Structures are given as structure tokens and as C-alpha cells.
Amino acid sequence: MRSRLRAPFGCAINSGHLTPECVWSPELMAHPNGARSLLRIDARAADARKVAERLALLADVTAEPATGGWDVPLANLRIHVQQDATATTPTLSTLTLENRDGAHYTLDTGL
Image (cartoon, rainbow, N blue to C red; front, top):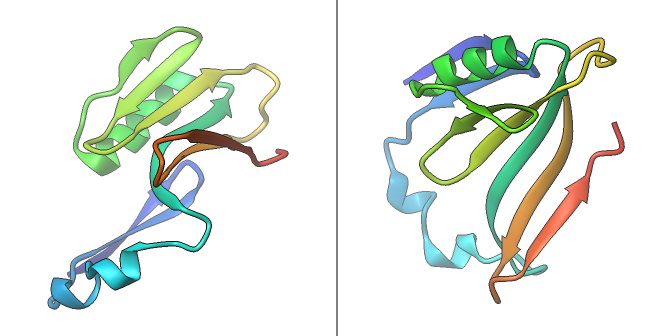
């Protein structure tokens, strides 16, 4: 199964694996830098609600109002879209990761 959908930050590709045991194997899940999971994605948009609702539609969830913008709650992470009138296009701003020791790191995209 594969579908390609228009998303605020480009396109989203949804695929399903016929052999998940080949993708979700423990030896492939460990990263040398210790990263274990993506906890949060932060973005900026002139119309934060519209962008959050579009992302929520792609994920089949409901966007929620949040401080300074809108959130898209997913099973394993949260996408926060900050209201920013100066953002000419929706832009990814930071990614928050968790490492194997439980420490959190925020990576700034510089955009």
C-alpha cells in the first residue's frame, strides 16, 4: 500500500510493509548517536490552524488549540505549529529527540 498526499511541508508518503520483521528488527533500531525517538516537531506558519488541520487530516487525528498555535497529537509524538505572521510558507523550526539514556535534545533547523 502506498499513497502520496499533499502536505504543508511538501508531500507525505504513506506506505505499509509486507515484511515488517525486516524493518522493525532490534539490530536496525539502534543508532550510533544514541537517538531513540522523535518526541516533538515544531513548525511556524502564518495560518497555524490551517496547517495543523491539514497535518491532522493526513494522520486521521484532530488538531488541538495550544499556547501560541495548534498541536497535532500523534501516537508517538506531537507536532506543534506556532502562529507566525512573518512565515511566508510553513516552515519546520525544531525537532526534539530522546536518546537511549532518556535525555532530550532539540535540533534547530536554522529556517
